[in-house]
Length: 169
Image 1 (tube, rainbow, N blue to C red):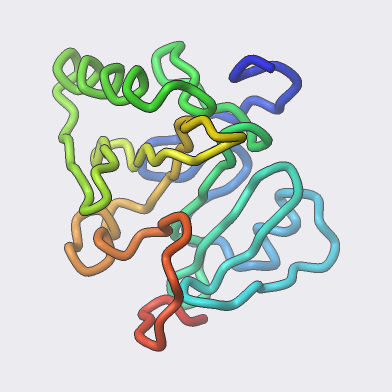
Image 2: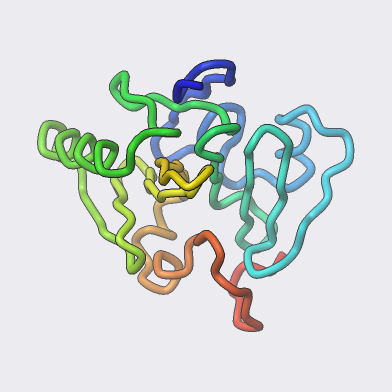
């Protein structure tokens, strides 16, 4: 399967959200935007909801602050025609570096060596799928990327939960 085959395409709205989701939405508004009748919080470290089709959302004080899309099953988002999900992570990182150089975007490396374009609210993580690493886009409200505290605690794959959490809703 290619990075875009058989999946929904969402539009990136820099600083505002992605697809039908806007930062600041309540869990009920998010569920409504995704066509789910009964929103259920997973809880955990981030005040998290997991939806079908590879969409995870995270809340700050009960308001949408972060959207993570699965590398294979999540919606595809294009940046300047480049698909952000399901790509070779090195190729995707090089694309972000080239994009930043061309457009004057601000770059940020997170402690797990992920790369972000902070002015667009795009963070590119990698995800293991069948023994292969693939790019996984995460869309984050700007003040989370600007704050070292939040930035260093963005959703990470396989990070154990702790009792210390600013994201409880």
